[in-house]
Length: 370
Image 1 (spheres, one colour):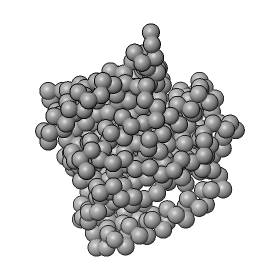
Image 2 (cartoon, helix red, strand yellow):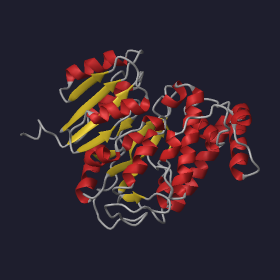
Image 3 (tube, one colour):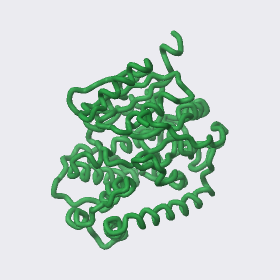
Image 4 (cartoon, rainbow, N blue to C red):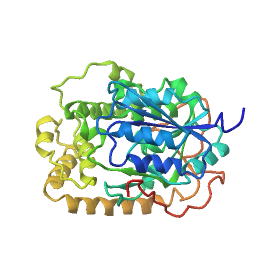
């Protein structure tokens, strides 16, 4: 049983209509400094030529195992199918329009070696636009406080397969926020460690699943996410919310329109969601409503100045977070109010073990199309 035949790690990536960024995403995994892994890719009935591109990659690198579906499964079920195809002890997630730093896998494995009790190891990320330009820096401030919102991108996850199997994997009832759902359930079983540096580049794009899907369904899904987070903040279960049928006429949490508009804003678009917020939002005399009204109006009228304001705000938050979160050692993401679980964690915002090397030089991945 040679290590090459039975690797320790699998990388899994669901794909649906991921052109023109697919080549760069695949290449960023194949050029990792750690190379003993299986790369399992699921083409979820793409119609833009992604399948043909993936077949060419599979011919070039025998680490790639390509799966194809005859009909589209959607974001949650495609994530579940490709993840279930992995049989290695550790599994890394990758998204089809993003980029991984060349040392991403190597450094995440080092954290697992140092924290064998961890269930998930993730990292922060830079945020890029369709041209690969960085539009936002890592949000280190999210690690300096307890929060029900997962502070890292889905594609940065590396997790233990036994923890994934124990929680039952992805749930279709949580489609469009399936990453938030599964990480929350994993955190109930084992620590979720985050490397507080950008080992990943998350791309804001017009081909984003949330933008390319039916907006009524996506709005209802994101509203369900916020209602579930409220339960988590109260240390209450939320499974019953997933079992209930959505009410198409129900008013939505105003934050839904900020969340969806943010994808358009950072992709360089002009979000026009103010009227929809007024029509569909659950508007009350509170800060949540006021901030959503201001945000959506500002995004529609002056998206450039809104992006500048948000960048300035994030810089200030990250500067404050330096008091609690360094730039080297991994820290644990802690759900609001804490949870009892099988494995112990480490104090929020702190780590007592030196596991990760100094910050690597920034690296970009050249697209195979260039």
